[in-house]
Image 1 (cartoon, rainbow, N blue to C red):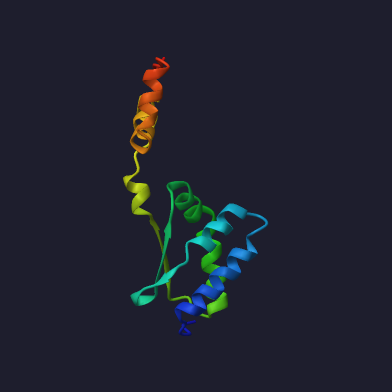
Image 2 (cartoon, rainbow, N blue to C red):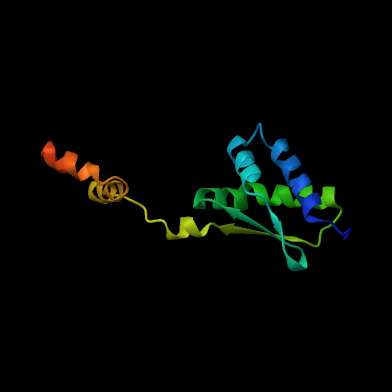
Length: 124
């Protein structure tokens, strides 16, 4: 099967699939609605996912079923789905210690340092 399809066709079927899985996998359905696919050259379908948990779940649970769904609904089995982890997630540092969390929050709100001093707070 190799019927041609457009970005609009892909988007319509993508949203149909998200609706289909909404009751069984509501978080992933929401993620699919939020992260729309992009049809690239050579029938490459790219989807950017927000975090590594979504990325892993997509590859493990969603991608095989989604491929079958799209192949059937688009009448084409020549495309490939390429999941991509958002660059923001790749760059994000995980905050583990209390000091790291405090430093991160202090960058967002410098008044936190004044409160720490005023109440003579420290880490355990």
